[in-house]
Length: 337
Ligand code: KDG
Image (cartoon, rainbow, N blue to C red; front, side, top):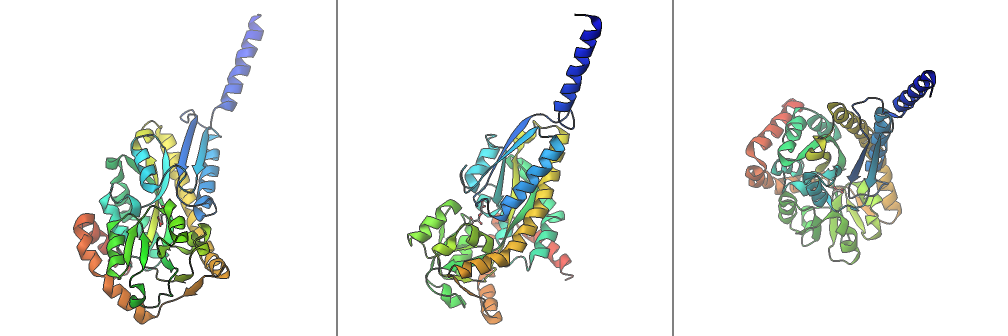
């Protein structure tokens, strides 16, 4: 082959290679599997779509980002354990079901901790959130961002819950978490810990009377089909954690790690906005589907808050007294107290 044509062939090959290579040579071909327990119609779906678009742009299409919905790869705890063993890349999980791995996460389960979404965002995206995220590598996990599960409300098939007394005797499903069990036992219910993926069937077969979740979850998981009443208790705010396997993370270049962090934050802002925009729509939809919704009076809420105040003291040691004190100090500062 003449020298000229060899040079031309080499130039063409390097040109093709440079076009095929992602935006930077530090980015390899990768496949990321991300799972969670909600349906794709949940605002987590909006967040994942935004994260995928960001990743496509930043890697030049070198990464495949596969999402698995409705506990297809196991429940939150199982998926998180898969990350720790390096057999799955990523999970969107509530903090509550994984407190058996990271006890400090129990701080987010303390009843009535946050007053509103603005407080939750300020704490989760600020120093306290960094403090919690910095703990995760010792458990084989990397937290990329906090997204929103949201303020939790009670649904049931027995009666409207308008006072502390109305909780009495209900069989309420709670997340696998001792703080939620204690809170709902203290409210006078029979608290039954259960993975999220089992809740619909348990409600449908009347194995349980009640469950508690944000309106968007009650809507997108169709709990309105098997529940009659929804009460605006807002008894806890649950964050989602966007966890990545540390073992797999450490095979990524610094540039790839930064892409994951940046795109998880892009997804966060889209997901939170979708969650808040959908919340009132979901409440309207579940009542249109036949659920009877009620607010609780200030007096009833004060009585319920008072009843569960002891949960803080009973679980401070398990969570870590320093963790609880740090959270309370951060909230006091935020509130100008
Ligand atoms: O993966 C989704 C679950 O983490 C989330 O729905 C958990 O709120 C939850 C519950 O009630 O289990």
